Image (cartoon, rainbow, N blue to C red):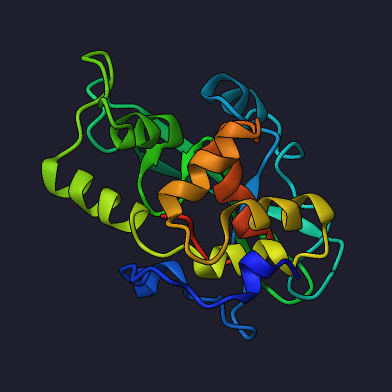
Length: 211
């Protein structure tokens, strides 16, 4: 592990909110999966026409291979003047009965908005008039989370066993905030930093969140 990861933090950063570091319980049946291939609304709507497109290859709980379409639920996007509602596919494992909700990568889990909207409001210069408005209290909560410690996320990357992610963690060090981690990801060309990083964190440790 790199020295920047092993050393103690020299900065006093606010700790991340408990809801961001909550590991999924090992005995929990089902949960949320993120399909990282779906990056925009039009692709998502096309995929929702075919129940096989979002279907997991196996149950993440028991590894059973028979996963059936169980339900579709509406998820509205907050503060969207167009009143966009997104349908979410839900699958049921025939082996253990676990249910899995599948989110497209562009949708921010628990935030009820698209990641590009979150990124626009988190930017230093703020969003343009064309972006959906976000309540001031919500925006302040987002910024508090971004300016809190990213130590657990850095450790997650450093212990992933993937050299590229270990190198990314080394660029930040344990002293980084979540905002700084996002900026480093953007600087090294790590896709759409917010959505890609959030999906990566969820893949490595379901339940742990970027924001």
